[in-house]
Length: 476
Ligand SMILES: [Ca+2]
Image (cartoon, rainbow, N blue to C red; front, top):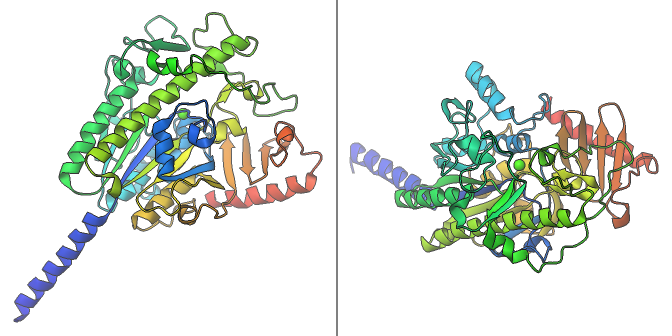
C-alpha cells in the first residue's frame, strides 16, 4: 500500500469511527413542566391520575427528594439551563435575558448553556413551548420579537405554537376560546372547558413536538429536544374530561394550613388572588379550596396525557431505546400549606419538585431514589450519561451514582431568594434571612415540620450555616 492509499484508508477509518460513535449517541428528551408539585401517583399520592408519568418512573428513576434552586420560574430555569447558580443578581424572571445581554457585550464571560453545550458536541437542539422563562424563548412586548432572544446560541430551532391565543405572552396565561390577559376581562382562576386537548396551549405544544420528533428521527443524528408544558401553572384551565376524573375524589387534608407566626418566607398569594375568584377565598372557604385543588389536579392529569402522547410517539418510532427522557418540575406550589396559594417561598412546598430520569438498561428501573439532589445536577448528569465531557464551569454534581444505584447517598440542596437563602439536608432545612434571622425545620419528626426549631438547636443552625456558606463560595 502506498502512502497516499494508506492515509486515505486511515481517514476513512477515522470517519467511520466518528460516524459509528455519532450513531450510538442517545437522544435527550427533556420535559419541563410548569409549577408541578411532586404530587403524582408515582410519588405516593394515590388520588392523582398520572398513569403516563407513572409509567416513565417505572422505567427509570424517580427522585423523591429533588429540590429546585429558586422558587420561581425564571430563576429556577436559569440554574437548570446554565448549570450555574447566580447569586449576585436578584432572583427574578429576567435572569436569562440579563445573561443574553452580557453575552452580547462580553461574550467570553458567559459559559455555554446546557443546550449550547450539547450543540457544541454535535447534537441538534430544539426547544418547544416553555423551556426558558418565555414560551418560545423570545422577548419584546408580546414575547415574539426575533431580535430579543432569551438564550442566544442555544437552539437550532425554538418554537411556540400560538393556537387561539395571539402571541406567546397570551399563551402563557391562556384559557379556552382564545382568552388571554389584557382583553379587558379578568381571567378566571380555574376553568374546565368541554373540548379536546387543543382547547388549551399544551395540546398544541404536544402536536408541534410530535412533528419535530418525526423530523429529527428522519435525520438519524442525535438530538437534544426540550419540551415545556405550561400547565399546571395558573390559571388552572384544562379540558373537562380531566376534571371529571376527580368527581368522586375525597381529597386528603391540607398539611399545616396556617400562616406561620414566626418571621418566614410566607407570602400573600398575590399571583393567585389577582384572578377572578368569584369573591371566594380558599384560605377561609374549604369548599372553594377543594375546588381549586381539583382543578389543579385536572391540569396535572392533562399534562400527564401530553407526556403520554410524546412517549407513545417515541415508542411508535422505536426511539425509546435510544433516548434519555428527563421529566422535571420547575418548582412546587402551595395548595394551602402554610396558608399560601402559590410559590415564591423557601418552604418545602415551593422548592421540592418532581425529577424522573429514564433510559434503557437503567439498573433497578422503577426503584425511586430518596437522596437529596438539586436541579443544578441535571446538566452534569446529562453529560455523564450521554458520554460527553462535563464542562469545568458547572456547579452541580452528576447523579450517575444514584442512577446506577438508588440507595446511593445524595448531598445538600441550596436555594435562594433575594432576601434569604436556604440549605436542605436529609433531615433539616435551614433558612437564613439577610437580617440574620434563622428558621430551622426538622423533618425527622413529621409533627415538627412547620415549627421553627432554630432556638432549640443552635448547634445545628451553626453547622448548617457553615455548610451553606461553604456551598455558596462556588459563585465567588
Ligand atoms: Ca414555574
